[in-house]
Image (tube, rainbow, N blue to C red):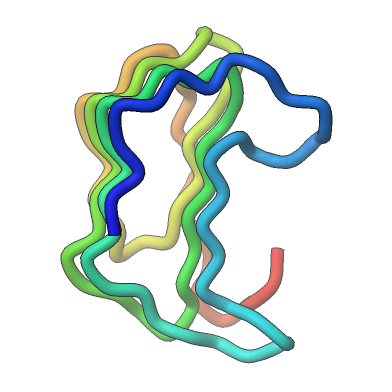
Length: 96
């Protein structure tokens, strides 16, 4: 799955503008081959899969210098500008 080349400029909630959560119903799940890339986001990016994952990447996104990227430790995060990187999400806590 790819979330790519979007302009997401407005947020009427307090959630991240790009939000990918594999963990559902109080259960840990995995996530594979998810790409979040080349987006312009005036908000944050969140991606989590507590049961592990492979081939996932958050790269080359543009933020507004006041938002963050928060992701599980097995997700590659690189080349993003205008974001703060939060520490990796713990894999033993399925729901944020």
